Length: 114
Length: 110
Image 1: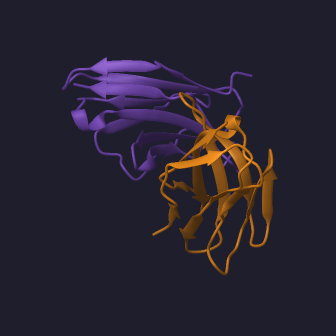
Image 2: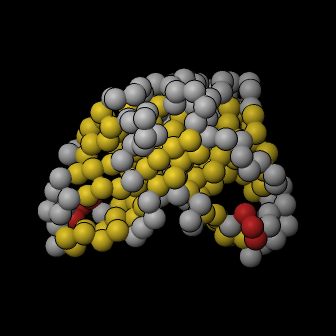
Protein backbone atom coordinates (compact mmCIF):
# COMPACT_ATOMS: atom_id res chain seq x y z
CA UNK A 1 0.00 0.00 0.00
CA UNK A 2 1.39 3.38 -1.01
CA UNK A 3 -1.16 5.23 1.17
CA UNK A 4 -1.63 8.81 -0.01
CA UNK A 5 0.57 9.96 -2.87
CA UNK A 6 1.02 13.48 -4.21
CA UNK A 7 2.63 14.89 -7.32
CA UNK A 8 4.70 16.89 -7.84
CA UNK A 9 6.91 17.14 -4.75
CA UNK A 10 8.20 20.58 -5.67
CA UNK A 11 7.00 23.26 -8.07
CA UNK A 12 7.98 26.82 -8.90
CA UNK A 13 5.43 28.99 -10.72
CA UNK A 14 5.41 32.53 -11.95
CA UNK A 15 2.55 34.80 -10.91
CA UNK A 16 -0.46 34.18 -13.13
CA UNK A 17 0.49 30.66 -14.18
CA UNK A 18 -1.83 27.76 -13.52
CA UNK A 19 -1.19 24.25 -12.29
CA UNK A 20 -2.90 21.20 -10.85
CA UNK A 21 -1.72 19.29 -7.82
CA UNK A 22 -2.55 15.61 -7.96
CA UNK A 23 -3.48 13.36 -5.06
CA UNK A 24 -4.37 9.68 -4.99
CA UNK A 25 -5.08 7.19 -2.21
CA UNK A 26 -5.20 3.41 -2.36
CA UNK A 27 -6.96 2.77 0.96
CA UNK A 28 -10.50 2.84 -0.45
CA UNK A 29 -11.25 5.90 1.66
CA UNK A 30 -14.42 7.86 1.08
CA UNK A 31 -13.27 11.31 2.21
CA UNK A 32 -10.38 13.41 0.94
CA UNK A 33 -8.98 16.80 1.91
CA UNK A 34 -6.59 19.52 0.77
CA UNK A 35 -4.69 21.61 3.31
CA UNK A 36 -2.05 24.28 3.14
CA UNK A 37 0.66 24.61 5.75
CA UNK A 38 2.22 27.99 6.45
CA UNK A 39 4.75 28.90 9.15
CA UNK A 40 3.09 29.76 12.43
CA UNK A 41 -0.39 28.93 11.12
CA UNK A 42 -0.60 25.18 11.28
CA UNK A 43 -2.72 23.45 8.66
CA UNK A 44 -5.70 25.17 7.11
CA UNK A 45 -8.36 23.34 5.16
CA UNK A 46 -8.81 24.49 1.57
CA UNK A 47 -11.43 22.07 0.24
CA UNK A 48 -12.70 18.65 1.10
CA UNK A 49 -14.72 15.88 -0.47
CA UNK A 50 -16.84 13.92 1.97
CA UNK A 51 -17.59 11.28 -0.65
CA UNK A 52 -17.17 10.66 -4.35
CA UNK A 53 -19.12 13.25 -6.30
CA UNK A 54 -19.20 15.91 -3.58
CA UNK A 55 -16.88 18.78 -2.72
CA UNK A 56 -17.12 21.56 -0.14
CA UNK A 57 -15.18 24.66 0.79
CA UNK A 58 -12.98 24.74 3.82
CA UNK A 59 -11.45 27.67 5.66
CA UNK A 60 -9.36 29.16 2.81
CA UNK A 61 -10.87 28.22 -0.60
CA UNK A 62 -10.30 31.48 -2.50
CA UNK A 63 -8.03 31.07 -5.51
CA UNK A 64 -8.44 27.28 -5.67
CA UNK A 65 -10.68 24.74 -7.33
CA UNK A 66 -10.91 21.00 -6.79
CA UNK A 67 -12.08 17.94 -8.64
CA UNK A 68 -12.94 14.57 -7.14
CA UNK A 69 -12.13 12.59 -10.25
CA UNK A 70 -13.12 9.23 -8.76
CA UNK A 71 -12.95 7.58 -5.37
CA UNK A 72 -9.14 7.43 -5.46
CA UNK A 73 -8.20 10.84 -6.84
CA UNK A 74 -8.70 14.41 -5.66
CA UNK A 75 -6.95 17.23 -7.48
CA UNK A 76 -6.36 20.86 -6.53
CA UNK A 77 -6.09 23.54 -9.22
CA UNK A 78 -4.62 27.00 -9.02
CA UNK A 79 -6.01 28.93 -11.98
CA UNK A 80 -3.86 32.05 -11.62
CA UNK A 81 -1.13 31.61 -9.05
CA UNK A 82 -0.27 34.43 -6.65
CA UNK A 83 2.73 34.82 -4.31
CA UNK A 84 0.32 34.43 -1.36
CA UNK A 85 -0.20 30.84 -2.48
CA UNK A 86 3.41 29.96 -1.76
CA UNK A 87 3.00 27.17 0.75
CA UNK A 88 3.29 23.47 1.40
CA UNK A 89 0.16 21.62 0.29
CA UNK A 90 -0.96 18.39 1.88
CA UNK A 91 -3.59 15.97 0.70
CA UNK A 92 -5.24 13.71 3.25
CA UNK A 93 -7.86 10.99 3.26
CA UNK A 94 -10.07 9.29 5.81
CA UNK A 95 -12.32 6.27 5.77
CA UNK A 96 -15.32 8.50 6.31
CA UNK A 97 -16.58 11.44 8.21
CA UNK A 98 -17.18 10.88 11.87
CA UNK A 99 -15.51 11.24 15.21
CA UNK A 100 -13.67 7.92 15.07
CA UNK A 101 -11.88 8.51 11.79
CA UNK A 102 -8.34 9.81 11.64
CA UNK A 103 -6.82 11.39 8.56
CA UNK A 104 -3.89 9.97 6.62
CA UNK A 105 -1.56 12.44 4.96
CA UNK A 106 0.53 12.49 1.83
CA UNK A 107 4.14 13.72 1.78
CA UNK A 108 3.25 17.22 0.57
CA UNK A 109 3.94 19.50 -2.38
CA UNK A 110 6.17 22.50 -1.80
CA UNK A 111 4.97 25.31 -4.08
CA UNK A 112 6.75 28.60 -4.64
CA UNK A 113 5.11 31.39 -6.62
CA UNK A 114 7.45 34.16 -7.75
CA UNK B 1 -15.88 28.56 16.27
CA UNK B 2 -13.96 25.37 16.88
CA UNK B 3 -10.23 25.80 17.42
CA UNK B 4 -7.11 24.39 19.00
CA UNK B 5 -4.42 26.29 20.86
CA UNK B 6 -1.09 24.66 21.60
CA UNK B 7 2.02 25.91 23.30
CA UNK B 8 4.45 27.80 21.20
CA UNK B 9 7.86 26.39 20.53
CA UNK B 10 10.47 25.66 19.81
CA UNK B 11 11.13 23.27 22.66
CA UNK B 12 14.64 21.94 23.23
CA UNK B 13 15.24 19.08 25.66
CA UNK B 14 18.08 16.81 26.59
CA UNK B 15 17.73 13.11 25.94
CA UNK B 16 15.77 11.31 28.69
CA UNK B 17 14.05 14.52 29.85
CA UNK B 18 10.31 14.69 30.52
CA UNK B 19 8.17 16.24 27.80
CA UNK B 20 4.90 18.15 28.08
CA UNK B 21 3.30 19.98 25.17
CA UNK B 22 0.14 21.81 26.18
CA UNK B 23 -2.99 21.79 24.06
CA UNK B 24 -6.38 23.31 24.79
CA UNK B 25 -9.43 23.38 22.59
CA UNK B 26 -12.68 25.20 21.98
CA UNK B 27 -15.54 23.25 20.50
CA UNK B 28 -19.28 23.01 20.46
CA UNK B 29 -20.37 19.48 21.10
CA UNK B 30 -18.03 16.60 21.86
CA UNK B 31 -15.08 16.43 19.51
CA UNK B 32 -12.43 13.75 19.12
CA UNK B 33 -8.87 14.83 19.87
CA UNK B 34 -5.65 13.85 18.16
CA UNK B 35 -1.91 14.34 18.24
CA UNK B 36 -0.05 14.16 14.95
CA UNK B 37 3.71 14.20 14.41
CA UNK B 38 5.57 15.57 11.40
CA UNK B 39 9.18 14.58 10.73
CA UNK B 40 11.28 16.82 8.48
CA UNK B 41 10.20 16.71 4.85
CA UNK B 42 7.27 14.39 5.52
CA UNK B 43 3.53 14.53 5.94
CA UNK B 44 1.72 14.27 9.26
CA UNK B 45 1.39 10.90 10.96
CA UNK B 46 -1.14 10.03 13.61
CA UNK B 47 0.52 9.64 16.99
CA UNK B 48 -2.49 9.02 19.24
CA UNK B 49 -6.14 9.87 19.66
CA UNK B 50 -8.98 9.98 22.18
CA UNK B 51 -12.63 10.04 21.24
CA UNK B 52 -14.38 10.81 24.52
CA UNK B 53 -13.83 12.52 27.84
CA UNK B 54 -11.36 10.82 30.22
CA UNK B 55 -9.99 8.58 27.45
CA UNK B 56 -6.22 8.27 27.40
CA UNK B 57 -4.50 7.87 24.06
CA UNK B 58 -1.03 6.34 24.03
CA UNK B 59 1.59 5.27 21.52
CA UNK B 60 5.41 4.91 21.44
CA UNK B 61 5.66 6.13 25.05
CA UNK B 62 3.56 9.25 24.42
CA UNK B 63 0.31 9.79 26.30
CA UNK B 64 -2.50 12.34 26.36
CA UNK B 65 -5.75 12.40 28.35
CA UNK B 66 -8.95 14.02 27.10
CA UNK B 67 -9.98 16.41 29.89
CA UNK B 68 -13.39 17.89 29.25
CA UNK B 69 -13.42 19.97 32.45
CA UNK B 70 -10.26 21.84 31.44
CA UNK B 71 -10.77 21.44 27.65
CA UNK B 72 -7.25 20.11 27.38
CA UNK B 73 -5.31 17.28 25.71
CA UNK B 74 -1.70 17.73 26.81
CA UNK B 75 0.96 15.48 25.28
CA UNK B 76 3.48 13.85 27.63
CA UNK B 77 6.41 11.50 27.42
CA UNK B 78 8.51 10.38 30.34
CA UNK B 79 11.86 10.08 28.60
CA UNK B 80 12.43 11.63 25.18
CA UNK B 81 14.91 10.35 22.60
CA UNK B 82 16.77 12.11 19.82
CA UNK B 83 14.48 10.32 17.36
CA UNK B 84 11.48 12.18 18.86
CA UNK B 85 12.70 15.43 17.32
CA UNK B 86 9.81 16.58 15.12
CA UNK B 87 6.89 18.98 14.98
CA UNK B 88 3.82 17.96 17.00
CA UNK B 89 0.30 19.05 16.11
CA UNK B 90 -2.76 18.89 18.31
CA UNK B 91 -6.03 18.55 16.40
CA UNK B 92 -9.73 18.15 16.98
CA UNK B 93 -12.38 16.56 14.84
CA UNK B 94 -16.01 17.58 14.86
CA UNK B 95 -16.83 14.62 12.63
CA UNK B 96 -17.00 16.78 9.53
CA UNK B 97 -13.75 18.70 9.75
CA UNK B 98 -10.41 18.71 11.48
CA UNK B 99 -8.92 21.78 13.14
CA UNK B 100 -5.18 21.84 13.76
CA UNK B 101 -3.03 23.78 16.17
CA UNK B 102 -0.03 25.73 14.91
CA UNK B 103 2.44 22.99 15.80
CA UNK B 104 5.22 22.75 18.38
CA UNK B 105 8.76 22.02 17.24
CA UNK B 106 10.70 19.67 19.51
CA UNK B 107 14.44 19.18 19.34
CA UNK B 108 16.08 16.56 21.55
CA UNK B 109 19.81 16.86 22.03
CA UNK B 110 22.06 13.96 23.08
